[in-house]
Image 1 (spheres, rainbow, N blue to C red):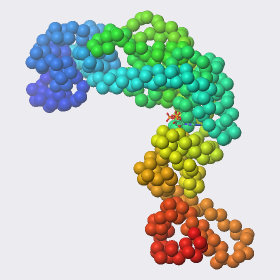
Image 2 (image 1 turned 60 degrees about the vertical axis):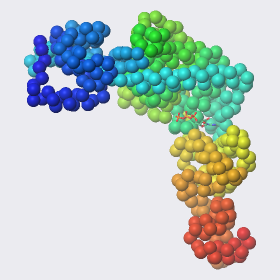
Image 3 (image 1 turned 90 degrees about the vertical axis):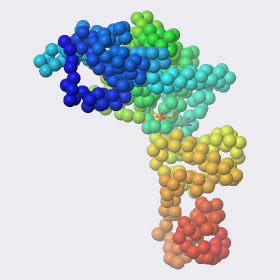
Image 4 (image 1 turned 120 degrees about the horizontal axis):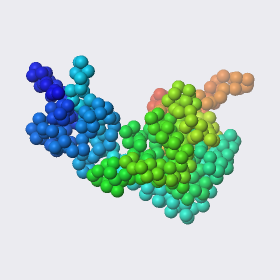
Length: 463
Ligand SMILES: Nc1ncnc2c1ncn2[C@@H]1O[C@H](COP(=O)(O)OP(=O)(O)OP(=O)(O)O)[C@@H](O)[C@H]1O
């Protein structure tokens, strides 16, 4: 059977297909190549005129299309490396005419070279980081990992201690909490407290393209990707053998992969893509989510059996706004750390800034607080000033109105309204002066009063 393009449509079709970023190849039932787009020419380094009308197998002996024609089956997302250092994912489908007769096959290759390269760089960096952490753990008392997690909140302290106590058991732990509440910090503390000899390996499930999940987690054998990485690559499960695998954003794990993860956990071995060899593994899983996984189980986007397997023990990390006593504690800890790193000596955080911090809702939790402290110290360094000023804060924090905090005691108006208003005025001017580091121009502008009036009030109130 042959496929013929209608002459009128041919140019339009060719134009469209030449301008999509995927490589498209079409064959007829005799495996003669009837279409080969521009992207295919670039991917495979084969000119259209050298392949059109020819048997596809002469140019691509291991193409999927002969299988498609023979079996009339579709194939989706198969890994391929058409030439060195180039990786693609192929899907191939049979083509039928209106009567349902097979007329040929179409294959589509999508370039994932950049993903593969990036994921290689990422895993190399993660490996060096794990090595550094290992070296560090040999010299530093690993108790310090849990002592890195500080809090003044009674309920949170209880949870930190609970987590420390179950670290030494083989139980899988599910950490639940908003972004920046310390899920990764807890998972590392669990690993180092557990005394497990292997590596701590972190995987962010929301950052891996779905097509790469299997090769990332299970690894691949040399043959699965001919080309650059001839030796193949171990997956994260293997890297974490005898250690801890931290599955961050577990709620974003593709549903299709969930049964495979469950099987590995139940059977205790993993098989690399392109291999039949079973590799025994002993991995403790700490997973984390900021979603309600129970709801995901109910709506079918997360498998119940995997949920119960991962959730042997669940710990909820409390958002910063619900443990306000930790704001000042953590802000001071970060001030010390960041000052040390930058050889600065900032002794304190002004009260106005702490008042702003206490009023803020900290959607980004502890990470947001750390970033703000970093910004303040760096701006202080830049201005050659060992003081943190309100103007160093981002606008959204500067806009928080702390003046409202002045509390009016309506029961004790003994002094009369005029005196009372003066007291309030004095307090507002004094706080605003401190906020702008006693810069009178900025204070007058902020309070929208003439500068001469501000001088007069400063004099009057002895500020
Ligand atoms: N209680 C704490 N004491 C000291 N530092 C903390 C605490 N909680 C979090 N941090 C610090 O806050 C930052 C964010 O923490 P981490 O990356 O563990 O959060 P996360 O919940 O994993 O965030 P995400 O969900 O966005 O990945 C890190 O620098 C961490 O060291």
